[in-house]
Structures are given as structure tokens and as C-alpha cells.
Length: 474
Image (tube, rainbow, N blue to C red; front, side):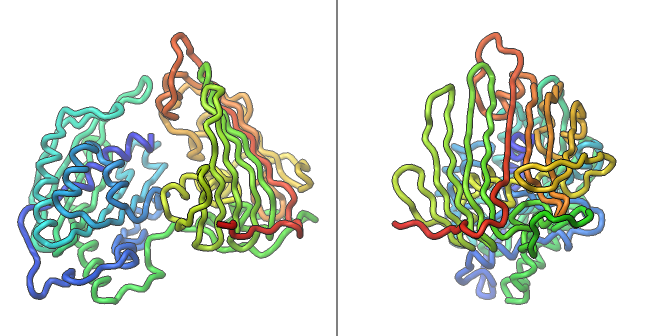
């Protein structure tokens, strides 16, 4: 679901404004740093109480020209626009409500984008072209997303000029088909394009709300340029409280700061080792093995190896220390930042990182499910067995919604009695082969009807003194 949905959001956030330009008093007529761009998007607290249950999507962050091209609905056209209109860099933030998506009611996503250009004339040209691109996209289909129609509306006085667009897109997912509307307000502020996109189900009128948020976004951009916004107010994931439990003799320590405090083992432990295996079998498929170690407060080593159709496809080795990262994809370690897309992609697969556990909302509050006392990997734990509860699985956000007709053979999670962090996971699920192949981007062998998806995760050597993570030798 997220991959298909983001295709449309990527197109929507490129929509813009006609006219406008900088002048002698243009506040953007100076160097604008990446740190300033990162502050310009509205934090969740500024969106309003109606978005209280929304969460910052992990795809949010700085967006390079290469990423903008990859994420675009029409990548070939976007590549031409990036060069033609002097795109320099950008920042995007997405806030999503899983509950609204399940209820099929109200806004389900709020996205905002701030794009920096070489000069104001280039920004103005790109904004005009953005509306034209959206109109040309009507009737186009990418990965089962079809743009059905585009209408414009007056967005009022925002920046030098502003335009509103309502885009209608239909989705096909397995046997289901549904339609979403995206209401976008784009505006120009000198060398910058700002835009807000609100996505909801067909029939929802979100023009006034999108316009109001776009006006807030413009005000925040100007405040950042004036130096009035503190770095601490940048968009961040909101931490949720950990589940409470009675203390036992299980290992414990002070938790470290994390977007998913109380969920990841790295929030509660001084050190540990981890291992994980994941496989998607569709008559021949993908197998991944992850292993590594964590040392508090922010040191992680992770090694990933994989095979496709039984053929070794190599692997990555990642080392993270604070904000620094080193990645070896087979040709030696190179230095990266922790927000680099390649690093983020690997962190999503490593159970030593909070990113791996970010979507396991079940761990925050098991609700009516009852855990059975158990001991695993030397830790006193509660074992939660989801069994055949397919809806419970979907509600924790682990699998995309298009995987309908799930058969849960096994879905067990062991949660430490002291601290509520995950100690182990064992999952075995059967799903429709065509839907799984589409979701994971894998080939589907002719005649195969069912896919099998398995994962095992173990956290071991808890708080062991001999675990150390050091920078690699380069």
C-alpha cells in the first residue's frame, strides 16, 4: 500500500504555482543550508488537533535530485525538469493515520514539500510546469495507480502566488479497487517552492484545510529564514509510552532517546546481539539474513546477506556511530550520513535499529491480547500469539493492506516482562502469490497461487560486557 500510495504523493507534491519571482528584498536570495530546509516543514504539533493520531512517515527527510527523480510518477520527465529548472535540493515530510485508512474516512495523509532552486526565475518556471505535468498525467498508470482527473482552484494570497489542485487517482490492489482525492496547494517564496498535499477518500472536500496549512507552511519558511525557529522544532516521530509490567530479574538499564522509545531493544539495553532471517517464497524468491550487535547509546554493526532464486546476490556491512555511518557494499567501507537512503534502507532491516521496530505499534499496547509467561534467549518474557488474527496483524502495520486473504500459520512475539522490549519474533504467513509478488517486487512463477512469508528475529547476549562497536578501518 505505502509504495503505491507514495507514487501519487510524489506527483502531487511537485504541483505548483504560476508566476512570481524574487526581488531585492527576497529573503531566499542567500545561501540556504540543508539544516534550514530540514526546519521548514511543519512539525506534527503545528498541524492541529484533528491530526493528533498521525505519525511521521520514515520516508520523510532531505530529498536529493536523484531521489526526486526516483520518486516521481513520471521519472523521465522529472529528470528533465530537475536540470531544466535548476533544482538544488528539497525536504519532504509525510504524516499518516493508519486508523483513518482502515476506517476509510477523513484525511489519511498530509504531505508537505519545500524545494530549493538556483534562482527565483527557475522556481517560477518549475511551478508553472508542475501544473502542466499534472494535467498531462491524466490517464497515465504507474504500478496500478491511475490518474483519473485534475482540477484547479484559487488558493488565495500565499507567497508570490499560489495555486490549488485537486487530483483524483484510482488504485488497484489484489481484488480491491478504490479512489483517493489529493488536494494540493503550492506556492512560491523566492527560490523556494512550498506545497501541502492532503489525501483522503473520494468525496472529501479538503480545499480550505489544504489552503490553511499551506499558509502556515509559508509562515514557517519565512520564520526559518529569519532565524526564529529552533532546531528542536524540526519534524520528528512522536514517542509513545511503553507498556507497563511488573519488574523481574530480567536485565534492565536506562533507555536511550529514540523515535520509538519503549519498543526497540536499543531503547532499554546497554548492549546485545541480534540475528534475523526473512524469506519470501513465491515458487522461488528472496531470502535475507541479518546479524550484528548494538552498544549503547548509539553504536550499531549490521551485516546483511541475501539470495534471489537461490543465487547469492551479495550483501552489505553497515557500522553506525552516532550521526556517522560507514557502508560496505562489496568494495570497501565508505563514509555516509545516517539519513542517506542506502543507510536508511539497511537500518530498516536490522533489528538492532529502532527503525526496524518503528511500525510494530502492537508492542506499545497489546490491548486485549494476553501474554503467556515464557523464557527465551535467557530473558523472562510474555509470549503473544496472534494466531489467525489477520486483522490484528494488519492493525500493527507490519504488512501492506493489499495482502488480503492472509493465512497466519504462526505469529508469535516475545516481549520482555521488564521494559516491554521485543526479545524474539517468529512469523509464518501464507498470502496470495500475485499480491505478494507485486508488493515485494519479485517475479511470479506461472501457476503459483500461494506465497509464503517467514521471519525470525532473536535478541541475545543481553547487556553482555564484551560487545563493542568500533569504526571500520578504511
